[in-house]
Length: 137
Image 1 (cartoon, helix red, strand yellow):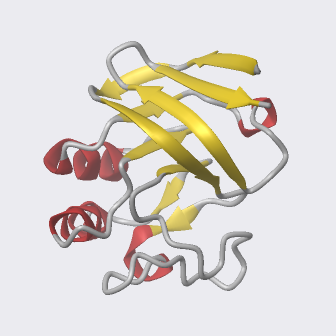
Image 2 (spheres, helix red, strand yellow; image 1 turned 90 degrees about the horizontal axis):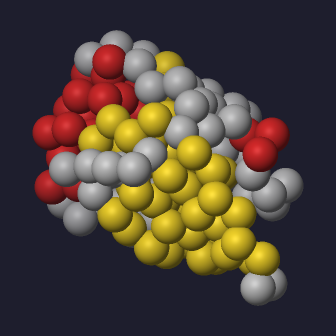
Image 3 (spheres, one colour; image 1 turned 60 degrees about the horizontal axis):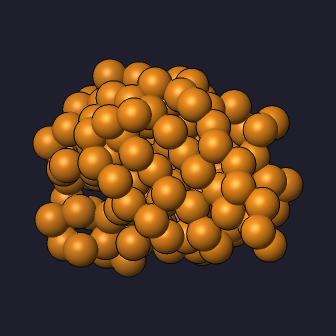
């Protein structure tokens, strides 16, 4: 089994092991994700209609205002949120949403360093160390 460890910047502490979905485009949490289902609703996104629920969610960056932080919080409060978020560049909305929802957050991970598929089965995020580990094979 091949193990890839990517080092980024840990922003919100916590660990999670599970499946990761990879958005190839920036996304707004306000309108881009359905708060009643956890599905990605942006028809221009490669993950259209995929659920972020219970997964590690990679997105290059988020789009939007501070309302997105409350969308993240509501998703998590209702059991529909991601278990962790990884991105290239975290903005204040994403940091706030993850912090108030206790979602591990790591940024400074480039999409070019990730597998070329949209779903990766075995990944681990460590928000304290700022690492994303991908197991393939």
